[in-house]
Image (cartoon, rainbow, N blue to C red; front, side, top):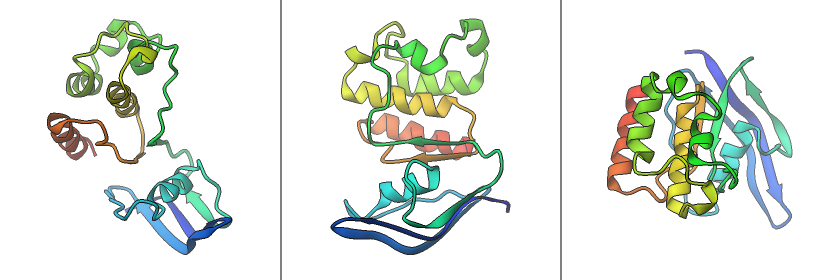
Length: 169
């Protein structure tokens, strides 16, 4: 399997504690990795290091050239002035995206109940989370990092997400 990204002897520290010291991790093509730990153990920080959102204090992050990485963070990153439609498909005309089975599957699984003309600012936290997850899953990525993707999902949404990830990656 081909190496996609990784970290070598990563160190990350904050003024009051060391989060990582000499951590080495690799992600290869076809890997499905879950990071488990208590709150505050550094799971989100590790994802941030690997996706490039956070720079390590020492060590290095390696990435295959041209690698496309997307991350679903815990924070809401949606533009509140956009509509649901713009967040998901941008300015593309319906005939451009409606024929894409990936887009149709994600829409049906996560946001079929939402009015696409609704501004993001008018959505509840749970609805915003589903739009944010759908936006990521509609994209074309080599690696996706999902930080607590089931937050705000009901059991049907969690079941759909598990089946979607298994079938797609």
